[in-house]
Image 1: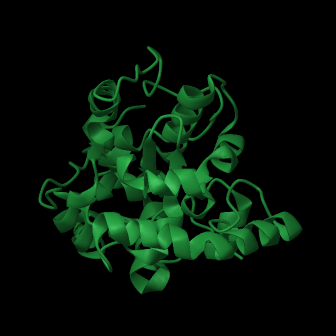
Image 2: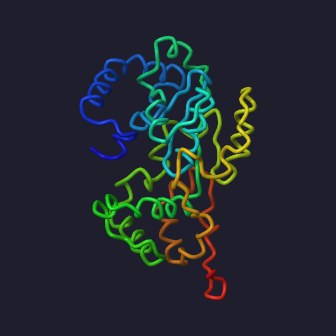
Image 3: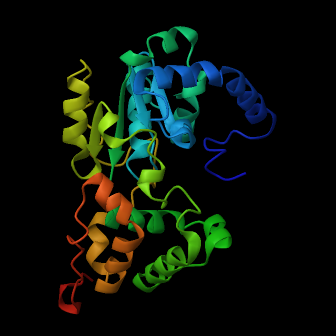
Length: 270
C-alpha cells in the first residue's frame, strides 16, 4: 500500500473498515456524480481526491504540491473554527463516498474547485520536499538536494518514475473532472487572490494571515521552489520537463516556452 493510499496515517483495521463502508456507499455517490456531470465525464480513479466540507458547501480536488495541505487546513478551520495539524485535517475531511444521503441529494449545490500549478515549479517543489526523507530516498533513489541531484531525478522520471508518486505525477491524472467543469480553478501562482475571490463570492472570509506563508499546523512543507528555479534548471532540464509534462502544459494553460532562466555564476546568491 502506498503512502498516498494511507494518507493521514490511517492503516490496518481502521482503514479496512472505512474502505468496506465506502464500498457499500459507492453506488449512490457515483450516481450523484453522474447525475451532475453526465455519465463517464468524471475520472473515476481520481474521485478519491475529492474532499468535501458540507458546512461550507464546498468540494476540493486535492492535488499534491499545489498548496494542498495549506488549503485543507484553511477549509478545516473555516468549517470547524479550529486550527489543527495537517494530517488531522486531512483525516477529518469528508470523502465522496462518506457523504451522507442528505448531502448526496444536494450534491449539485456543492461548489467544487481545484488548484493548478506551473509544472516547472511543481516538480522542483516535489523534489526538494520529498527527497529530504529517508523513506523516499530508499524507495525511489538517493538524489542529493542539489542542481545535479535534480537533474538525476528528472532522468529517473524519464526512465519510468513519472507516475510512481502523486507528488510529481502529471496533474491531469489527478483531476477528478475536466478543467472546465469545476466551479473554480485557482492558480498556485495567484493563490491568495484567487481564493479570496472564490470564497468571498460564497460569503466566506479568508483569514488575514491565510495562504500568505507557512501555516502553523503545516510546518516544513514550503520549499521555496519558485525562488530557486534559476539555480536548479538548465536549458536541457527545462526541455525535459516540458516534454514529460506536455499534457499538463497544454491542459492547464501554462506556456512550456516560458522556461526558467538559468542563473549565471555572477547571478548566484551566496
